[in-house]
Length: 167
Image 1 (cartoon, one colour):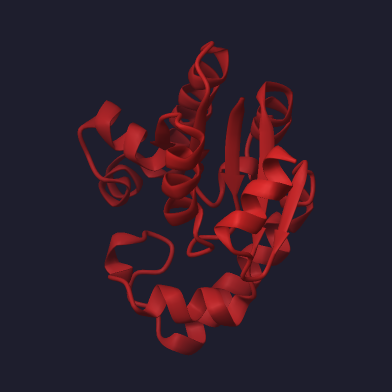
Image 2 (cartoon, rainbow, N blue to C red):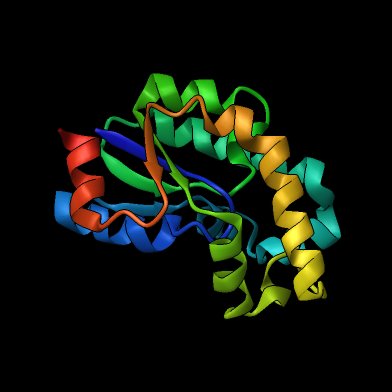
């Protein structure tokens, strides 16, 4: 089974994805890391030099290539991946989509503990600006996220997540 974790930046897609993949004994993929490998640049550098349109096109093409593979995996997608092209429909057809729906306040708290300069959409934002940006992104993306086959609300444990996904 292919499992696609979707949600806002800071929702735990990578952290949960690695644990889930280990538990299911399948490879873990981070779509942003795959794009960085292809381009030989960080996501921030791709955004800065090639711009978002190029990034989103490469993202969609790469996602499709993984969806076309026969192997199972767990993939952490970028926060915006479901919102562009037919990515959400493609993921739903290819496997199981899981929306990690974490409260905005928790996401802001998590992100503030990281290096925000590594996140193109949040670099140089104050805590208040970060909260407003996360709130805006959620409002823009929620209709796509809600198309996921599985919804995980708040702070579910890995066991609860596994049960919802595999049960």
